[in-house]
Image 1: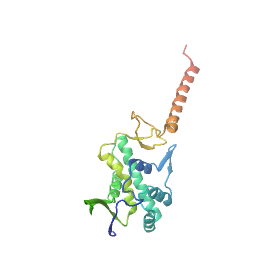
Image 2: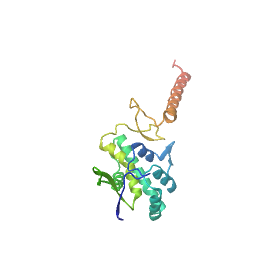
Image 3: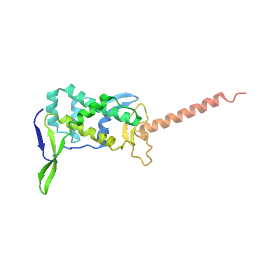
Image 4: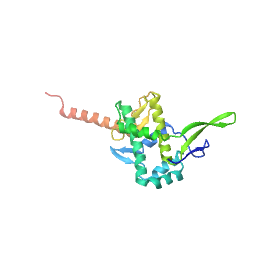
Length: 215
């Protein structure tokens, strides 16, 4: 473990926290089309752009860590954390116990979060963050999963949703007025479901008309 640095707060271009929407953006980088997985972070460059573009880490720091860890191992870690959050989100929505390995993965990355501490300042003291120098990726991943963990801790999971289209399974938080949103997007999955119901209903009516009443 390399020495721990104390960095000034705020640090330009470096966020210490993410919101739940950012967490869900991360989870949904593995999406599904007609039940087939579509990888949204297939390369190291894609993943670095995702993290650095959201201010969760500095690109040079990530690149230096990738050079040490290797492309495949670094990217596999990112995917594993994403899959663990997805597994736990699904378990929360479907009300069943998640795989212990998913919990272990999330708990491990949470331990990489920057530690908050008091520092001397004008009018007594202020808040700073303590960062490790050897795992900026871990810090970024910790920031991504923290909003999900906070929601679970606060009991604020009643609006967690998964798209009702089994071929999509997009995750989202239901912020609709009635709290009855079922689809990732009404114009896509919701509309397809309406069309399918319409066709099924009319197919049944046509079949009834064709057979007619039994004499």
